Image (cartoon, rainbow, N blue to C red):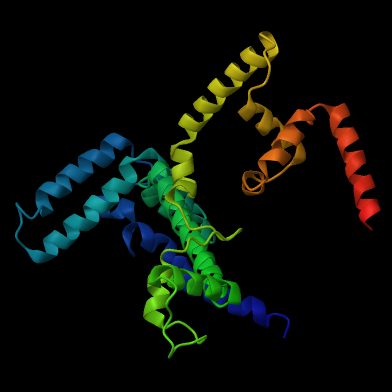
Length: 295
């Protein structure tokens, strides 16, 4: 009972072992096909191939069987003329039990080098970008569908309908839902900006970002040098836009939230110079006190 698994393994190996040689010269021996010994040098192998090719080449011998022999001889010569593949073949002869290792080395030698790594990288980037775009588009359409079901969106459609019709509504419809055609027409005029589900853009794809990486890095470098020269070397006052940038970064406010902030609030925050640590600490203390007071 204990030896049964080992016996089954040996039987399986008996079926697998011929495949090690089959991947090189089918069921034949490459050296035997050329009529040379395993110790033959490259010159002897080349001479044997030319001799057999003259005998079995289709242009010299129209016999169909001779054509088959020529194909086998040419394949054997391709394997044995190259030192790397010949070394692999000799290893497979000496270690026939390493079926999977020998097979992997063969396919790597004959097919692995034919694939340009750059082409593989470009293909992976394009595939990743396609999945990224598809994912973004799916999220966007799902979010839009959910928003269109909300009462707020329906109210916007009705308000837009009233605006287009000059305040005159169809009495038959009353407060019922707008028909699908009108909803589609008016819906195109409403810009839906949904946080976390923005409309997909080609500029956000990984492949495009990598393509524009040199430009992005050079632009960042120029900006950093100008910033250092203007505010660190020349010690000039911060411009309004740069002060807003520093304030937004200090407060860690998203771009959309900062854009929607009231101008008077922005002016007050910029005036506080929150990018300086002491001013930020004072501001945070005031905010904590205000929060406690409201509670």
